[in-house]
Image 1 (cartoon, rainbow, N blue to C red):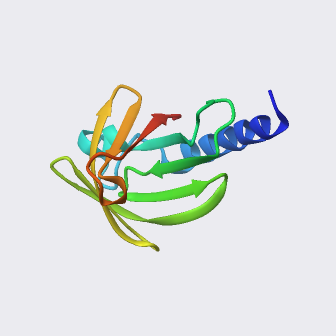
Image 2: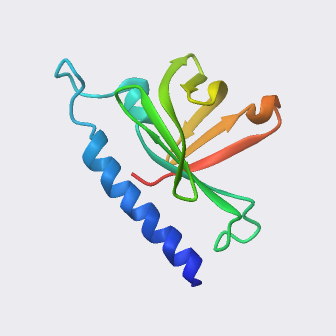
Image 3: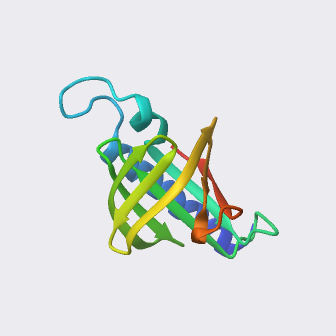
Length: 131
């Protein structure tokens, strides 16, 4: 394991612990259990980008999706965007500092796929649930 891989791993673990403490999934604002779309999407998700070799990706994207309809994104541990999210059908809308982005999404087990990346229907990003 390279030093860079080890540092990225430690950084992801720290992000995951902080987000679990901050986001939580027990209750929403009115005391009802979180569930539905929020429960399905809420969590910390990672994607290894440019990863011909998963042990040595070009960069790592971490998106934290809160049950309170907020999100944050880091790239290699550096905050890159944050804001709010909403869902209509299978369309996920992220409204943040970088503007509004709309993706077709699917969740299957511990995988979250964003399709329509870069306004192209054939480009997608697959994230893996960390928490």
